[in-house]
Length: 172
Image (cartoon, rainbow, N blue to C red):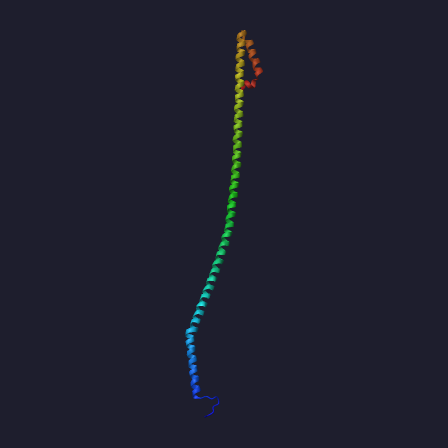
């Protein structure tokens, strides 16, 4: 027997090659049945995580857009509220002006009515005075006829009566 440094005999080489082929075959089989499904599962998981991250980013962008929209609407609501208050103030001022104008018109109407009534009362009083004068004149005429006095006495009685009543009353 020959002595070899490591005892590399053809049988050992043959066994080593067969072991390597077996390990390589085992690796291929394991790769096909174990590693490929694990790789597929990892790839699918990565894709799912990527999709979830993209969805989260999209949702975040949409939320920011909604937030900006709501903030804009809130500012618009404040502007609209200010406009409504401004319109209400304008309407209130217009109503105030209208009420004051109506009150002034009513005061003018009341004053005119009072002046008209005073004028009517004045005319009525003048008419009453005239009636009284006529009544006095008829009484005086009755006295003149009863006394049967001459015209000079009659003229003096008329003059005296007119002086008692007053010239301004008779002339109005």
